[in-house]
Length: 170
Image (tube, rainbow, N blue to C red; front, side, top):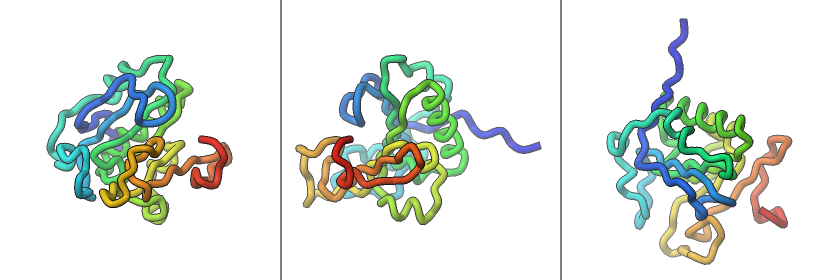
């Protein structure tokens, strides 16, 4: 008999009522652990994979309100998590979709790298903001991004990824 996927996540925190991590009002989950360690990162306390605290997917879902547009996975680095953490993130994202919400994710990895690794989170994420923070390209006037090298990728209803700059609206 196969092992049941973990329903526990190690997080740095959960932000309710976020209006900066994607469109609308959102629940943002800051996962714990990052291998990228961008210089000038605004969340360096999330780098240690053993830091933060453990919370159940159910407890995170209990924070999700009907008026939320969706959930945002941030960090830390959602795409650097081990198999158990990734399984819990997949479960969380699927539950949000079942409630009619969308799933955004922020990654310091570029989309091409994640796609090349066939990362399973790409299957459940609707919008990806990719790329490491680069101080020399810092631009606080950008919507949903903090440096101009970052890109917003949107998955179409057919499952095709499109770079936001190729679209007229978000």
